[in-house]
Image 1 (cartoon, one colour):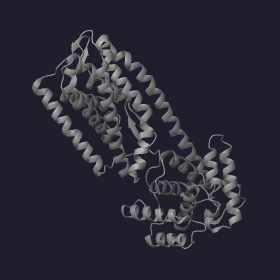
Image 2: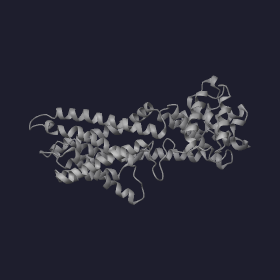
Image 3: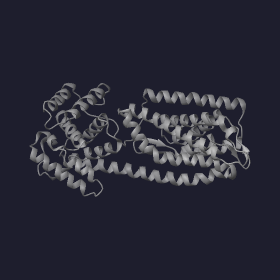
Image 4: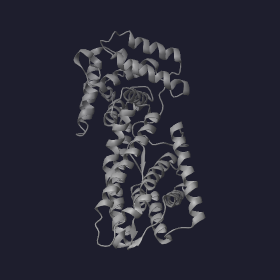
Length: 428
């Protein structure tokens, strides 16, 4: 029974499959887009040069969007420009009187324009990510634009009241965005909502704070800098985005390297083809089921991919690579040698410890990740890529009959739920 699906940092490929939450969000964003464009077409574009300038920056930001770890698509420049336009009070001393619906229209047109080049080269858009950015920006626009006339300071007055309201509203918007993202992710990866909130908050906090601050400063700077504020603030955001892109690229390359290393045991005939990938995917699914946080899932994925690397030390491969059928001493030796190989990298100390302790009995209290890998490896050794549900049930029953001395029964129960949930849709 083969577990398929994305890893912690796997990228989507092909046609995007949408769940009910994503479809609802996309429909809501679509209705907002229609309403915003229709309203703006009916009443005319207020402050056309300003709208076009911000729309162009939004389009440029969408063109330069990037995918962060966890398959999260972000567009920092686009988001900052959208927030700045929603919070705009005046430009060069001229009051900004555009409505919330015009903000929606400018955001939507800019996002569409920035997405067209991606479509032209065959990169399908992440509709849910675009819809989320549009929806979050719209929430801020509908909350702030009715207050713009009241908050706009008279000549000689301070901007503290306006700044305070901007900060509060943008904070609420970011909190709402995290909740929406958490709801979507909880449904997509089958994790607890509380765990999804924690992960999304941790991942969104650094970039979200920078984008929010840039949006506020862009709105305030337009008062004295006029449209040159767009260029002045686009430059540092672009530098930030380049840094994030390099970080994401390094993480993606790192995972690809580990996957390639894990395949060495398959190429050498020490384990069955696809074994490491199946164990990794099943282990990550069980980890999510158990409520593990994303950094822990990443370590679990790395360790599961390389859990059999110690078999390279064997002069004669274990038949079928099934360590569950070998004696305990040899299994411990394989785990220890694999941990030493991983530790030589100098940066995967925790992963090495997880691999080293994967064969320990529960009386030694091994880490949760080690327990999960031990159960996932045993399951795949017994099932061996079969899609026979009876064989899968027999493998799970064998792990249950252990009595709790070798296999954590809570992990086995979580694995049974994962197998039962994914099997009907041919993912196992």
